[in-house]
Amino acid sequence: MSIRTILFDLDGTLIDTNELIIASFLHTFEHYNYQFSRQEIIEFIGPPLFDTFHSINPEKAERMVETYRTHNMNEHDHYVKAFPYVEETLQQLKAKDIKLGVVTTKMRQAVAKGLAITQIGDYFDTVITLDDVNKPKPDAEPVLKAMAELNADTTSTLMVGDNSHDIQSGHNASVKTAAVAWSYKGKKRLMQYNPTYMLEDMRDLLSITGV
Image 1 (tube, rainbow, N blue to C red):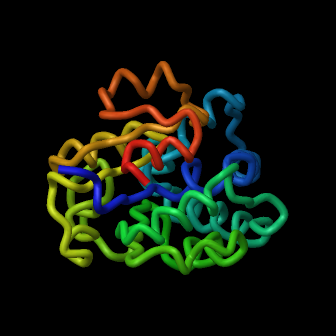
Image 2: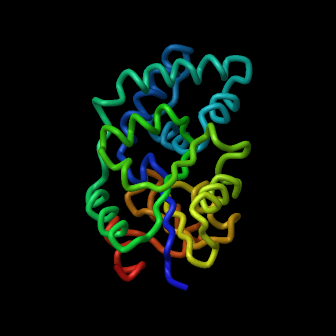
């Protein structure tokens, strides 16, 4: 069956927040006297913040999350932009009645900010954030919740993301998956998780869906 529903991760997939994320981690680590290289910080991109900080210091994890989020929100608009061809691709997919959703591990307030500044929020029929689930990606719950809201089925749904947990969440929900070659984790790394497709740029979705 052809693709009729596409679910997207947000950061690193639709919008370029990579430098903002790295800057926020650097700020937080400096505040709490930790030293991590840029490459080490790139490895932290993707999973829920609390999980990352808890693995570093369980006692300070909640405070570290708060420090990170304060910096991230204050600096957000200086960094964030949509990746090339994102809006025109979303527009064409929407014109062909393909249902579109966002499935992210970010909290709703930050998600709304990112969608607003890039002006792509109106293209989405549902947005599932960290606030909306009990088990974030790589669990299937966020993907399944989005599908339920869109009345989608597994045979015609595609999950698109830039991190391993995006692909794993799609696999766990039994839907098709697409990794993006512009991921900071690297195309070769993502291929290890066996995505159904690898997108060289966002317009590849047009040929995959036959738009």
